[in-house]
Length: 439
Image (tube, rainbow, N blue to C red; front, side, top):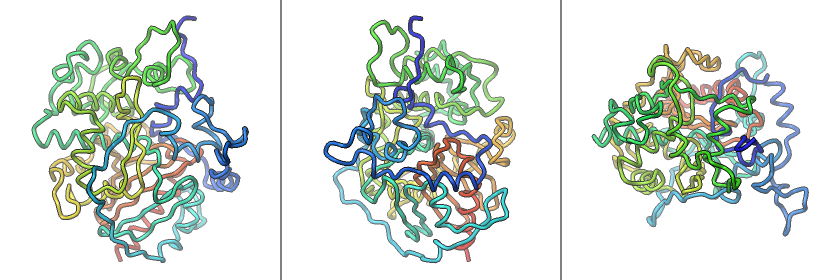
């Protein structure tokens, strides 16, 4: 059949690996067993040249799956075209360090079990590649494993969405974007799509109603057509479908009324990225570099995967260093201040920290976050500490606890994409550290 969507994983990874699901997860015991049998990432692509059985190519159907995942998450720029997120030419601003050896042996009880676990045990169980904890702006814990070290970049998955949402809130606070405006008024090309009748705020909070399926078990689901359009790889000669993010977003149709329920769909973020770029005349990478990355004293330049015309993947394309995402967390904790400078409006962060509407969120059925909400591409737990987070599949997290004055950033290559696969251990572990640091 002409233009029938085929789904080798190497061509379709762009969307599904960045969608932060929260379905019922595996038991902790099963996750423990998987962590013990995982293949070391150092064995992949080792040697000059690597042995044939150790090679990973972007043409492989499984380059972002199974045992290969733990190498791939640190090497996206070697597999796909990327656009640099520049840190600038200034010297990085170092993070102060006051390591606390007590954190490693902190004990907590994973959700749904009666057996305690230490913080370091959870590091291994969750296939953690890098983990850093800041308390009052100082590094109190830092550890690397898998493919990652202090100099490496790691795929952030859907944590990218939260940075896109932060940029939008900055522009709203500065009066550049009106959150009540219809998308069609800002981008006329969207007037005949579902997004045309949605407000900027509805897109930011993912309360749009879209005729769009992210059912990966369905070979005809819209997610595969979106992935095909987003892929920077060459298309078949007879391909006539959308070839870019911009082209695909114009085809999405409405299904019901906007504003009635939260529904996590990555295409909202790419639409928001388009609104940001059209409103500022700058690509997402250039704007993020100019407004945040250079000004926060980042240690490393980062990068975004791109489509065939160089459009950054706003919904999940960022690869960055662990410490630089810790700086993002600290920027949020300090309401836009870092290194003694107010680099973004405090109101932008305050708007995010209000959280979303739990009633709209509840309709989506996220069982591991029963009291949660979603706003501006950030996740809210509504716990006693009012913690909130950027989250991405396979275990990526920027966890911000205002009460404990704590930031945790984790990079991981958990074999289960859904965050529920690690939430049972991660969320109690984060709370245990917050309690410990608050004493």
